[in-house]
Length: 201
Length: 223
Image 1 (cartoon, rainbow over the protein chains, first blue to last red):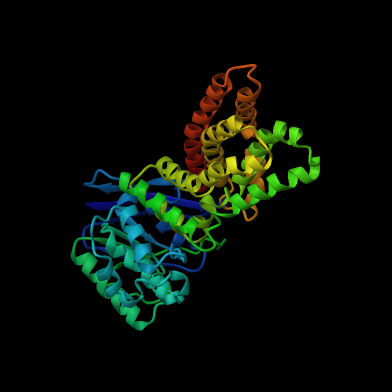
Image 2 (cartoon, rainbow over the protein chains, first blue to last red; image 1 turned 90 degrees about the vertical axis):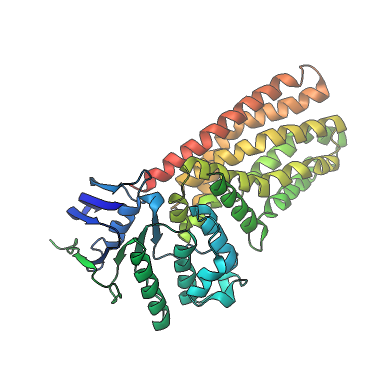
């Protein structure tokens, strides 16, 4: 399995963000996307997931029949957590929706240190707890591509360490990661893509 | 794919029935409309019985418009829509799942309560059966029509009013044949089956058109 991006161009609202972006990711590799506000980091991740349509270029998953989107997890600025549902119900839904089989909900919550919150409605969660819940979804439905947009937002140091450990495990198991961040992210040997300032003339 | 479909239906039903889900609002609104009609036309029971079926249909139609715009808006606001787009199922099927859950939570209660409200208007018992049957066929079509409006107005802050304006004109054929079928039972000038079959046909048409058009509208938002 190899994720291939060729000649990718993106424009938002008639403004060109980046052009001719190409990269490839084999099993276990990771890419860290950096760039100033408005450079198109989020747009790049959404393009790879298929949540946006590129103006030009190709995104493909070589050695797989499915689409890139069906092999991807996208964790964005919004946590996609329903406040009226409990933490457990949120994960059960994520698992069933994304085709996670019978992976353990308890274990996923435990790995992010929120095992005790399983039966609490998510509306009482703090921002950091919601983020941990959104990240726990990565574990209940195993998918090879993780697209993480500012994953450490609202996470405390222990949360960041848990995430770093899981990202390392994911890569060791042959998964790939594309992460966009301003903060320091513990991704060993990750290649860096620096997006130009799209707003600059 | 079935698992995805059932997951969406189950989650949306849960959300609708919990506090703040708004599943009961439609029924109360329906009751309010039916209750104010006698105040407007006066306590003339033969007149109320004659227009009763039409009042029930108008009330059910307006009540089923409530909350239609929220079908996709809630998921759009909290990021769940991205999750739905990454599911291993066609967007059309997700649309069918969301509309089905919405109808069970908001449309089905209207169908069940309609005969009771009909008693308040003195509608003929035979016509009450017909009202229930026509609403059972007609209200899903309103919901599936609403799916299109919900998808079109997903990113708009005041999408609710837009949804109602978009849907009402398209729902007129349902209203015409729904009421015609009910009146046919009472008046007996034409057989019940004629307008009822047309109602079924229109309803089926919207059941197919709704998810397809809604999916197209959601895909357009990505560009």
